[in-house]
Length: 95
Image (cartoon, rainbow, N blue to C red; front, side):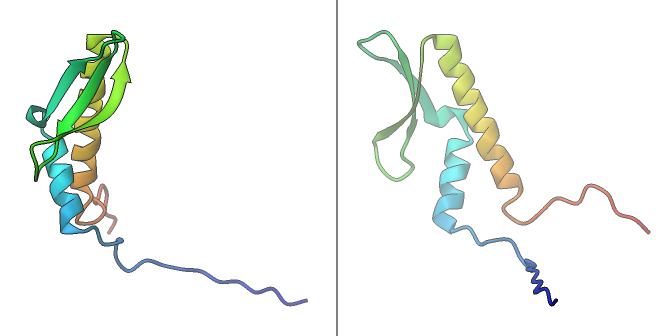
């Protein structure tokens, strides 16, 4: 009986476009976010488009504190993504 076995390796990380990097840098700054209250009483988080004067809605929360926490989480998320744009981070090396 013969088994076929195949492996794949990555020599480099998948390439991310400059436009995507620019967006991640933009949304990783809290100054580019805002919270608006909707007619139904919910709070909506939005970030400003880096190229235009428009706002893009992201999440809706029941409380103002929840909306601010959502923004803080988004800022942290995109900041972490930017850390790994240039490849994985070495955490330990053996000799």
